Image 1: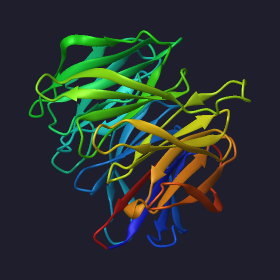
Image 2: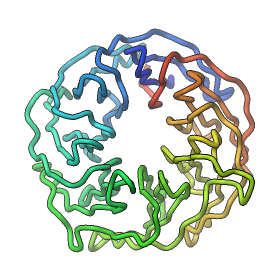
Image 3: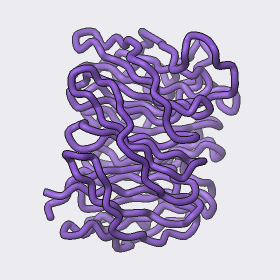
Length: 341
């Protein structure tokens, strides 16, 4: 079955569609889909039939139907918003679109129609704090977490209970994970087999591991490890997206400023991270995505307008640059999906 890549190219007001060669990692451009208002982030439904997009310059949430035969996108719905969504995702069943709002200081949950479209008012709009970033539910679809960066945010992770039938979210107990270090949690990913989450820390230039109490839906910090070299770099740097391989052995987090990808090995018994090198990437690598079978990883430079494609060594997790591909102005998000063809 074919693999398709969707790239939100913010300043060009488009989503670029590519086919992905799972063996070589190479990309073949198929088409550009015009999306006004500055597409900034993407999410694909669990059934792989729908794509959702959040726009930044004209705040809006839009939905598209994915053509399984050729990856084309057809607009199915849109919802105007008062503030731009810095992150969107679906819940684990694909019945709701979750979104967080950096300047809007809130989170929302929008219902998804039977046809996969968005269009109605949110079932919940809850004020949190400035700097709200990623929002995901846990594998049981019972809890949701929302990190808030530091400086322009309170340096916290908010914990919620999530009702997968109604889309309602309510504060868990405790409602907030208070962080002693100046970390600025931004994005996170779940370990595929351990009860562990990893957060990229925007201001702390690091990755933190948290243990998940699956019964209570609460997090406990157990490790923080830098994304930068031990010495020799003192300029401004922030961290963005984070990716973990399907087997849970390797983890990657990009540096915006140092313009690199920090690589880690993961202890599959404890979840502990160990540094596995730092590899130069495109300028301001805001978007990062692992490809089919975790054979390649794709890093889009928001400043360079280029996609760097790296081969992933299956034994060591080390990265080797294979090629770069032009994307356009301001690529911000990469999503890859296998379609039925």
